[in-house]
Image 1 (cartoon, each protein chain N blue to C red):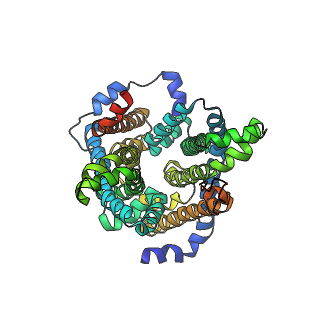
Image 2 (image 1 turned 90 degrees about the vertical axis):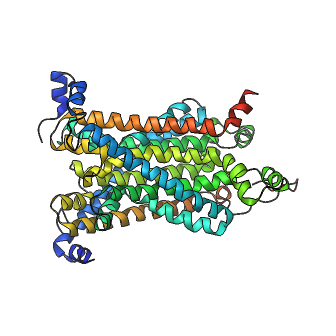
Image 3 (image 1 turned 60 degrees about the vertical axis):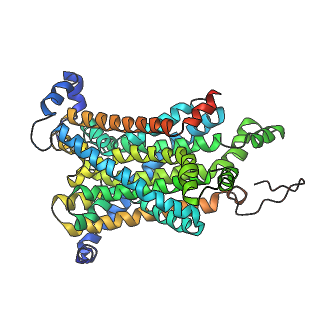
Length: 232
Length: 233
């Protein structure tokens, strides 16, 4: 425990480009950037594939393959191939690994919407785009958000590992500390990353609570229909 | 670090992977590919098996006493969100620089995936089937082993496939504490910029994951013959 007080009690660790605030901000920046880029690709693609029903097999295969790909290997491969002149070689694998959880869950979410619900929406005269935006997305939102949460967890972890290939962020404390046998830095950095990951998990859990329609998450009881049967 | 290897790759053409594999497959020293492959298998198989062995009783208990499920799933949900590297690092002070340091967190991740799978699997047993078993005079234990668990197999094995594939790829992060099985090829290649170890490492890990996945699909076919029989009829 003295390692923790050594690390957090050292004023030098609280300022400068390798201080805790700067590293925390970097970790947040890289994670947010990778997640945002992955969302930009995965959500429209997932919506399209789920809505049209074409290409589903590719989604499932890509998700399985991404799970099998070792993150450290991919990071080292890209950095060796492209060099360390910019952070691009590190960001590419980060984004690549963040895409599949969002893609597969968006696709599954849209695909698993009750076909009767979809037909009813078309029957009411909604256009394809309206059906997607007003019916399919709200109903699929729990799964889409699950995909985002899994992807965020993945990105936070991968960003940590990416410190090995020269990326900044909280992983630096752990990797550099381990290399120089500075165990206060290793333990302090590890605790920071764990807290960061828990905070991310909490944010996404709260996001799910606040954005999913109460009718979809069954937080309100659906009124009984005429037949007397509960519609849940 | 030197020039990007892509430049040299384009100029010289791809390096000979086979030659590198032949030279490093079994050097007789620590760190040969064969050696690392063995380590990798141990560090990924132990968490898969231990995770299943621990998740089954926990899942059975959660299915029986529903109040237990929410808190148990909640705890493992949080555990699952923890990045592996800091967890390895924090464990070092307890377990040292050993395989155990990698095996313990991977086992917890495995339980996090398998616990809901076991509970959902048992939940997928139709009520009329359960009641039929009771009416036929099955004791609770026999009902569990001969009726409920076999029906739960597809859902549990689906979870196990996820666990197997992700455990096999996650072991490589252990290379950052010197315990990464084939992941050691990545750190070695980074320290001494050279492509073949990275490529061979990635290919072997993905191949191991695919083999494990295939074996589990095969296991499911053997364990649930009625699924195919129903489809054929």
